Every structure is written in structure tokens, then in C-alpha cells.
Amino acid sequence: MADPRGWWAWAGLVSRLVVGAVWVVAGALKLPDPALSVRAVRAYRLLPEAVVPVVGYGLPVLEVAIGLLLIIGLGIRVVASVSAVLFLVFIVGIASAWARGLQIDCGCFGGGGFRADATAQYPWEIARDVALLALSVALVVRPRTALALDDRVLLREEV
Image (cartoon, rainbow, N blue to C red):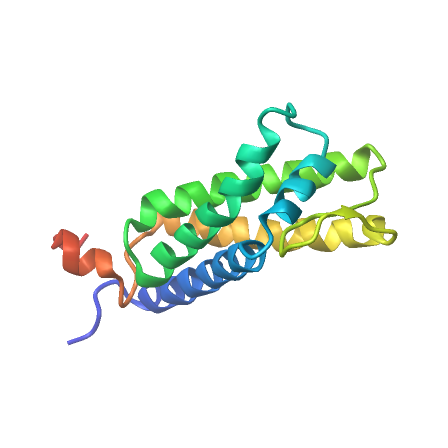
């Protein structure tokens, strides 16, 4: 019997795995040295100093959690919504750094702080995050995908 969800079931699976893998890798690279994550958050100069450590230490854990949940396909619509909001925040942050002339590493995959060639990297970082934002939004709109744990846990009717 053919899958009633059609091609999206498999395209959605690929979307989940791509976005999930990016989140897991981004968070896992920051976990061994959370001080670098704090430094990256601080480099943007957007948050009050009292909030910077909370975001810097918490973000890698949140990234890994989002990634793992997307990979296994649990709570797809909610998790993809959080993913989309975070990508939007990252796009705004990078654009803000670029507009203010800051030369910083985005800190997306570890690192952070000064980066001499940052201005040349900002368009690519924004483009990457826009693509990942689009995949996240697609998962919010159509969360039913192949091989998702949601189908087993929620026992939903076909839509």
C-alpha cells in the first residue's frame, strides 16, 4: 500500500535529519568548552551581561536536544517551531553584527570572538541559516514524515 502522505513523507524525513544533524553537531561541538559558547554570545553585544552566561551555557544543551528530537521524530511541530525561532534569532544576530561592523565568528559550530574575515562569511552564514529556517518552517507546516516516532507515540489518524 502506498504511503498516503506521498513524497513529503520522505522529503520531510530528509529535512528532519538535515536540520537535526546540524543542531546536534552545533551543540556537541560547544559542549566540551562551554566558556567558548559564552564568549560567542558575548561577542554579539546584544544581551545584558547577566543573561549572557545563561544563554551561553544553555544553548548547546538546547541545540543537542532539538537535534535529537528531530532525528527521532518526536514532537516534530513543536520542536521545528523552536528550531525556526532560533534560526530567525541567529539570522537577526548575524545581520546585526554585520550591520554594526563587528568582526566576529558566529559561534555557530564552536569558537566565537574576533574573526578577521567575518564580513566575507556573514552572507554565507545567513544563507545557511535561511535554508535551515525554511526546512524548519516546512516541518512546522507539515510535521507528518516517514519513520517518525510521533506516529508510534501519538497514534494519530491519517490527515
